[in-house]
Image (tube, rainbow, N blue to C red; front, top):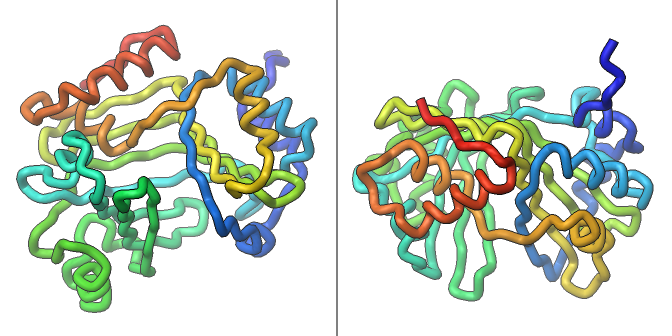
Length: 263
C-alpha cells in the first residue's frame, strides 16, 4: 500500500474556507506575482503553508478544483503577439468553466501600462464555451469591455488544470496553485502537457508582509513571468513568432527536469 502523501492529501489537510468568506478578502492595493516549481517542491510548500495557518478554499466538498478555459484570438493571433512583442497595454479574452460547479463565464483580462491587470467577467451557459456568438448579452459585453467584437475572434487554444486556492490567516493574501496543466491548440490540432510543473500566483496586499513569499524563498521557488496561454501557443504552433517565449519553455523543462512532450 502506497503511504507516500499526494498533493490531494496535502490539500485535504488544510482548514477550509468557504467561497462566501473568501469573497470578503478584498486586496485594495493588490500585487500579483507568479512562481514556477515542481510537484515535489510543492509538497513541502503546502506543508509549510498549513503550519503557517493558511486555509484552503473548499467548493463542492473539495479543496482541489478542475478548471477549463478556452482562449480566443484573432486569425493572426494578435493577443498572443501583443504579449510576445511586450506591448504594455494588452488584453486576453477567454471563456472558463469551473468544472465542479458547472458555472461558466466570458472573461476579459486587461493589462495597463503600469503592469496592473484587471479582470471583468459575465455569466454564460457552459455550452457556449466554444461559441458564445449566439448570446446577445455576451456579445454586447465583449464589445463594451474589450477592443474586440465576437466576429473578430475565435477559439485558439484551451488550458485545463487543477487549482488549490489558499488564504492566509490575516486575509491579506490569496495564493492560487495550478497543477496538471494541459493545453490543446484548436487550430493546429496539437496538444501538450506540463507534466508535474506547478504555477503559483501570489495575490497580496502591497502594504502587508507576506508569509507565503518567505515560504517560497525558503523552498528556493523563484518568481517568473509566465502566461499559460502564451506557453500553450509557443508549444503547439510552430508557425507563429515565439522566440521570446522559448526561454520560458526551457525554464519549465529545467524546473521539472524533463522534456515537454507535444503530440
